[in-house]
Amino acid sequence: LYLANAPHVQGRFDTALASTIALALQAPRAMPVVHRGDIRRALVSGFPYQLFYRLRGESLVILALTHTSRHPDIWKRPG
Image 1 (cartoon, one colour):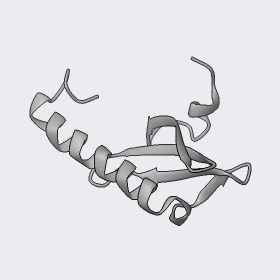
Image 2 (image 1 turned 180 degrees about the vertical axis):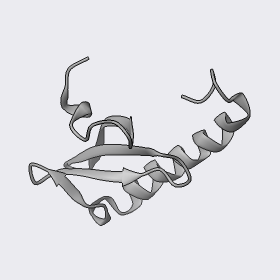
Image 3 (image 1 turned 135 degrees about the vertical axis):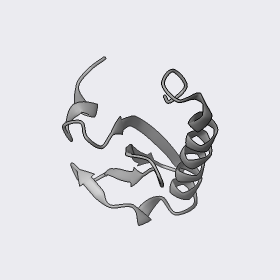
């Protein structure tokens, strides 16, 4: 995401995103429910991004990664 505008930040962003996903995998119900009772949101530490996901059995399904300044429903729109 940052590669085009700030390549020196890309590694930090990748690490922060990986940590966010790992935390969601480790404690998936710790993040707040934000939509329809089962969609949760995790903030990417140190960056203005948020990860939306849901649980399906033992799996974590990532629905979207969006910038926090975007409309909160942007991830619901197709393509």
